[in-house]
Image (cartoon, rainbow, N blue to C red; front, side):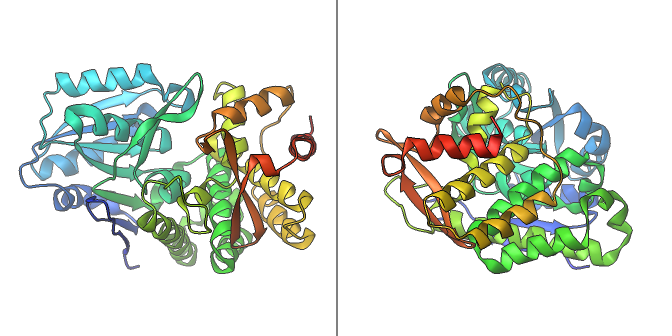
Length: 386
């Protein structure tokens, strides 16, 4: 099967880069890294976690060393709760101890937590090192590895501290998805449904068809089927192409933009998702699982405000239900969720901006002041069953 490429062309003096998608690409990861980086690059700081590194670390290091790179490995703890200042400080100290210079590079091998932390550290060390992404989860492949948003969590919210730092390249080997636990697959496909819902009926339909044809409970055993692998590569490429299209024309999420192509629309489902993660101390939900609840909430609120039809809501919920059960929302307190909304990145001035849905492929941005608090509260109670 042919390797697929999505090119990300950026303005604002940012460099262009491409996303390479295919199977068994880790076998040539060193050649890819050398193509993406300058000839003077000698050292690579490879950031991963123990679980992912056990699967792929040795092969990556061998590939890099065959291209003349000295590889220094930093393994962080696994999980969103470890994407914090303490981990950032440890990583920056590691860069210093490894004597990285301005011509060296950072490579993230893992999911979105690894990519966000490594990207932020690369952005601030020596005021910016080259950065490569090798995402190994579906969510990271279609979302966090593309677009340049990096950051860490803190006590007052998720991803509120970070930087825009575009990668020099992204390498996606779909066969790394064979090792994903079921929850990670559900989380990734929730993000895929989110992007399909705000993109157009083609991407939404492609995503829904894939999940119908290839149920997630048979995902790991399907990699021997060429039709499955080809459909998976095509879906990931289409998802990335949509995100790249949005990023290319609104790289830094212009606060003045409120149109349907604003980068803000990529946050559909994320206002509640980030609030749920915050009030559970980043321990109960995978990010994509929280996004699943966020999608249901934003769509239900859209229907309550009479901008989304029941048929469209049912269509969206049917696809989400097919992805599997989400973690319980038991013991989540309504008032804490409402309070967490105040720390959302989409608060402009004093008003939170909601990403709602008029129909599949037609997102809209609404100001909090135009939405009755009672509607928000009633919808939260219904979706979260609290």
